Length: 203
Image 1 (spheres, rainbow, N blue to C red):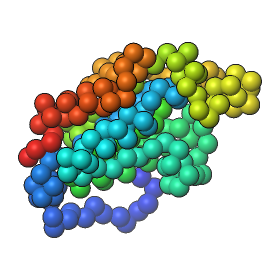
Image 2 (image 1 turned 90 degrees about the horizontal axis):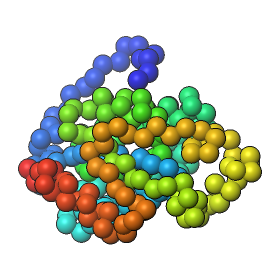
Image 3 (image 1 turned 180 degrees about the vertical axis):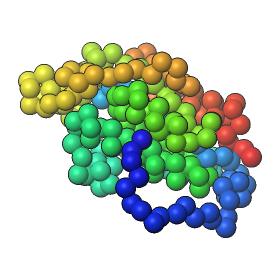
Image 4 (image 1 turned 30 degrees about the vertical axis):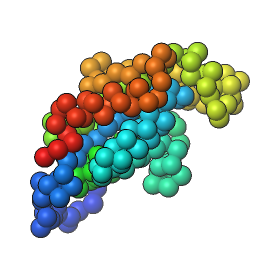
């Protein structure tokens, strides 16, 4: 997804393999990539899934858009170029967690298909589960706890996805969640059931 600029660097294999870590954990590592408009429920659903898995003794981690932008990606804005770099970095971090046998839930708008596909291509088949959280603009605006849509429509926020910047919806996501008509617990259960049925919660 980006050019390798550092020279004289070499990948080092670790003594403990991913398979050994997964056997110790009792489950497989995987990245749950929640994508959708601001206010669609990505973070809320991701945290509900995290809580359900934690209650079952699963090793988990949540990477949330705002939290990441307050630390790792604090030097990035919301231009198309910065959005791409934001997702690239998160993809690399997610890959590391996944390789350690952790189930990673990420909650990012990630509006561009090419960026999401780039993250998928970082990982072996089956490690990246794209989850589209569907909600209409009207629904998202009615939730809007931060007042972002109001600011975007007033021109106070530039490059706001769904208003002044595009959102490219996934064409073939592994999971589609209808946030317009279903509650958080029901949506989270759909994700956990998918993981169970596909064999991720055991080794």
